[in-house]
Image (tube, rainbow, N blue to C red; front, top):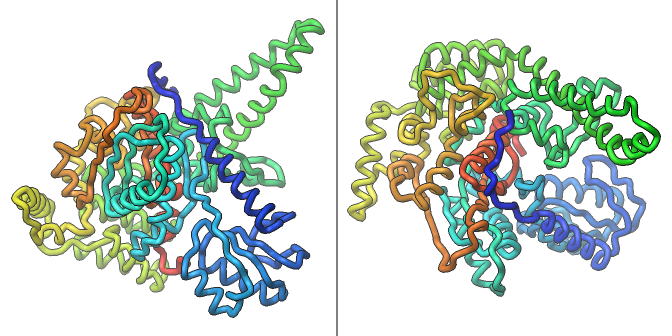
Length: 580
């Protein structure tokens, strides 16, 4: 079952400091600066407050600002104040357009990081992915750099910074500018190494079905800000219930990284252990019973409640996945990852589209086929596109354009076979060492080159033995032994090599923008084994589970910082034509 950590693993820094900083700053802004006495959640419904003056704590999102402007004009309650994590000209333009710019004030609340758990921090910017990678809007790069600067000021300095991707490079440069502008106070380093990675470096991983428990809960129930709402099918009552999912939930903490096939066995054993603990009451005298009630009973009842909830959630997941023919879906995904039986996979996807099983699921399978095969054959592309538009509507034409722009769903060009692509990469490597940039670089733009990367990094483990998911031997366990996530494999390789040396051809296949910077000081040994990984564009719970496994194997502790938690549905929904 659960993989035991090495005894020499370092302790993680205390991330609760981030919560205290944000809370104290917010209290000061609300109470001292704006004299706020009551808080309401901003929802798209009539404003319930009767106060003459209103203060809105919002993200700088144009639809939200427009809605608030409309409500303020309706109820004639001006002036008002806006508190934003970052002040953008676009929001001010909306206020001016609505004719209330002079009646409102704006203030900046420097909220960058939300700790979701002991090793997960989120910027809670789901729009980062679409804005940066699709629209080319780089306004959030400064926010990401500021978040890194905050971590550096609290837990730095960092001894080594690695990165790959254009956005990572810009974020690093933004952070360095802020470091040079500010006062650099000497601190004891608590985090040694930092790794920045763009989401478009690895699209295959978020497109795969998640099979670790936490990932499945996110796919089925949608975890938001570390909280999940279980419906009536889980609670077995008329009310839904919201639950915080983090390491404080003892039951969840032990199964979150487990492959789902192991979860029921663990929960059954947990139930038996709990019953044994309850049975200890039998034969107790009054003194022992009093001690049991005061010291153990409350904890046992809480554990019993959580255990019941997770058993019900697991049963609900099983029912939904069985209904979707999950095993056949996984088999198709594994064939796509391995490059086997591609015609059968295309037939499966066609059937999935024509049965209208799920708009997003069909799109996910199309994208996974395209990314793993370096594009679809022209006849397959035309046929599958036509069938999808007939099944789900011609208004998805713009969605196909968005996917093509990101390289998620493209048509193979004549002659662009894998061998040709690899020869161009080889030419690019040779030319670059001679100090030249050739047209081979531009021809590689928006190409996945997954097969070549898979062979060079051994992303699809080859083994005649059956993969034992109860005793995982590598990070591939998060995908049933079929695939090691590219993002996590890159991190492992760079840490092993202490840089990108020896990975030159791999970085060219990914389109480069890699960098490695070493500081001129030596941190304490424990700090060297604390690795901060920053995902720009989103990170999946499967990747977090893989990094936890890697940390336990190698004696590291990983802190994952992400612009938002993502999965296949969120990733593709952000690219739909009707996305606002």
